[in-house]
Image (cartoon, rainbow, N blue to C red; front, side, top):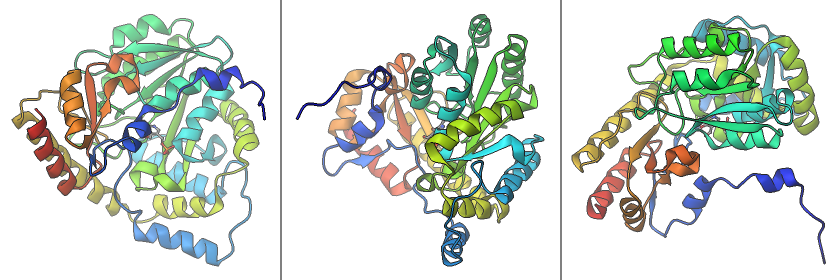
Length: 367
Ligand SMILES: Cc1ncc(COP(=O)(O)O)c(C=O)c1O
């Protein structure tokens, strides 16, 4: 049977290279490749979901999400981020991924230019393309921080700029003054900032600041996924000016109707419950980061010590990369995150200390 042609918008985007590396790993490999916590969702959050099922909370919610969840999100944004939002400025989405997609569909017109950090999280570039926009890949400095002058030069005439601090794949946390400068330049140029803050709670000695502190023309994206080890639940949100949020809600409504009701009750428990689970996970990531950094430095690698997220971005030639893969350690080539990542490899330390130790032993044999 013959099939018809595929839409150009689908053909224009590529499959993520990250899963591919993971799936093609040889048997017995250990993985430092995935960007998801290896913790199970804390028990009180799972219990809240079970209670929601038992109580039959199984119907549609408002398109924008449960009111009490949006209120809880606003309360967290006020206490954790010093941001003032009301529930009508929030849409609960199926993870940060949907929030990014929806925001771009709602704001980016065909031919609009969108500044995207290069290397950066893979979805940004592809979501811009799916919206008909033109990704303007902004190279990072050699220390993997954003090049503020390069950003400023490109802002004029752009529609949107993506900020992601702490960043995937580099682990870089931009200082407050850099965030302020970029956001203020963007506001002056009439460019909306999409600030993806999914790693905000995983910082080690550094301080994070929300872009929306410095301008109203910002869409803040966040999720339960990383903070509460809830990647599979698909619960995140976007928050921004009401005029944007109304348009985002329409896009969200026609692809998703509403986020999963059970996941929303779980997210409510996450945002309103005891936050010590987040600190415990952060402390464990910090210990793993130190272990992996030290281990790789002892083997002769040198790289900027990341201050956030759970990634290390390490300069590496192609032969060393292949040898590490051949020795049974899965890592991701930097150019999977944009051509600016060429010559690097991303290590994720969202893996147990045992796995990290096994990986280090194998890397020692590989180099
Ligand atoms: C920077 C960044 N933003 C967004 C996401 C997607 O998050 P979610 O699972 O909530 O869709 C990821 C996942 O790896 C990420 O690294």
